[in-house]
Length: 75
Image (cartoon, rainbow, N blue to C red; front, top):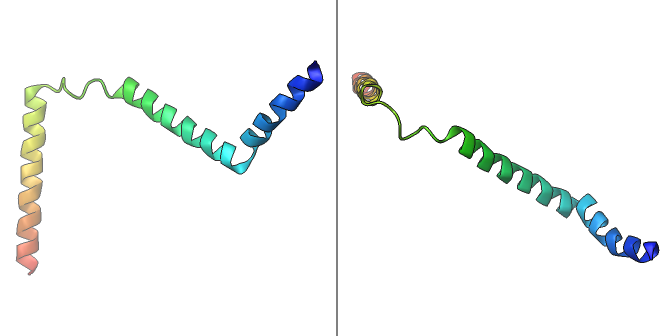
């Protein structure tokens, strides 16, 4: 009985230890890690206060103007 179980488990073990199996395990591990990270860290994106959002937009606007003026100055 145990020999039959060993014969059935051997191809699965060989697949998981082969290049394809290891590649799929790494891809699955990375995908699962990305999902967990997104779940843990991504929940507060919509809860940004208005004054912080305005400050970000003002800063980006000023940086854009500096960039545009710098490019036209040198050209």
